[in-house]
Image (tube, rainbow, N blue to C red; front, side):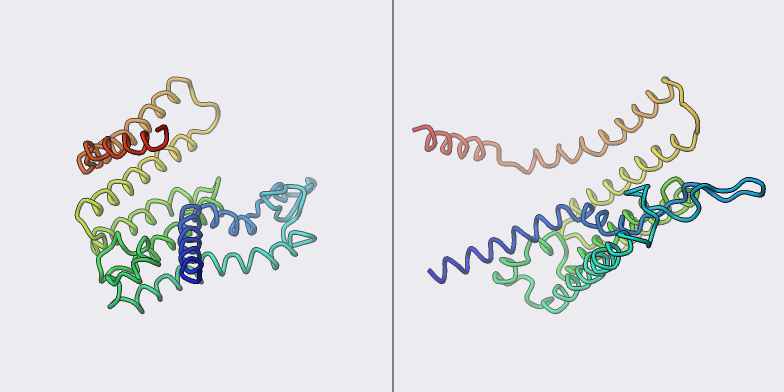
Length: 254
């Protein structure tokens, strides 16, 4: 019974970690959006007076930032959440990978934390922490620089830094995985640049321009997804997969 309880505990821990990393961008958005404040009405020269001066919470435009219940939510949830999600968890992941760098290939470590390090080389097992920090940075930029000219300046540099890290460190265990990571980064960068370029046009864009932009976005993503699916299709043992599926079907329906 103790062995069974131990196995259940291990499975629950692994499942919790997998779910957490799957929703990592959403977790970052949830904690960082606590500090998302915008100007509703900018003060102008006399005799005109701003009706709503100051900063207002983007999630509730009726609430001024850092006053009332927003201040309580910021101190009780926002500050601890940002520290936990954006600082403590990536640092803990890097520390665990570094501390166990000589035991990464052991079955016990692979059982508990293998999904975090299996994609990377042994000397770059900590790179998942870098990916977490990159995700936090991209989410923070999208929240705090939205609808500002600085967004178009920061995004290219952030993606360039991410690309350089991948190209120089080459942290992935296989060349194919590293190439897919580079291609996905390029695809994401081009997609965001196209979206930002369309938002810079101002006014109501023409239907033809919207269609052209949509076609470009679709083509860019298809160019990336197509080769990835083709590589995955070659890696799958289709004959064994069909046989296993038939066995499962017979056992369920027999």
